[in-house]
Image (cartoon, rainbow, N blue to C red; front, side, top):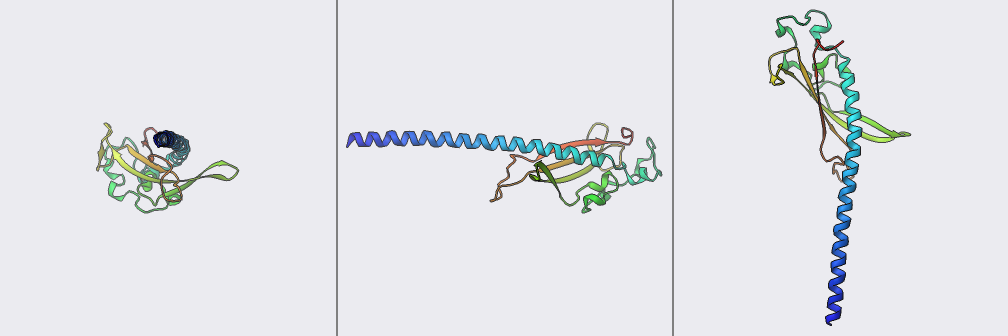
Length: 174
């Protein structure tokens, strides 16, 4: 009886060790998948930011009615009139991208296989110190929140959304 109990405890100990090892490997594999998806999210974010950068700084700078370093920046679009609910393709200048409907961007791995990333965008005015301001300035900060795909039961495959910020100014744009 004692030998049977000792053998049972030994088997339990081996099984516990094996379970812990498998859990560690599973967690490691999840980290690898998350890291790989972050690379894809970075590429998608770069592409979207490049596209946003091709747009005029503001509707007023696009039509030439305001040019930097024009002293009265209050003629620029006010922050409360930024974007809100537009579609990505309908945005005509940088602030139009603020809080648009979430954008789904496909990232191809090979031969049509890949992943969909969801991108949420915010745009805000910032001052020369990098602080958000409700008053117009010659600097707009665009923030992208890129979320990756999820498992069938809704668990995200990326540990955290990929967040990237870029600042735009007509004084810097060519």
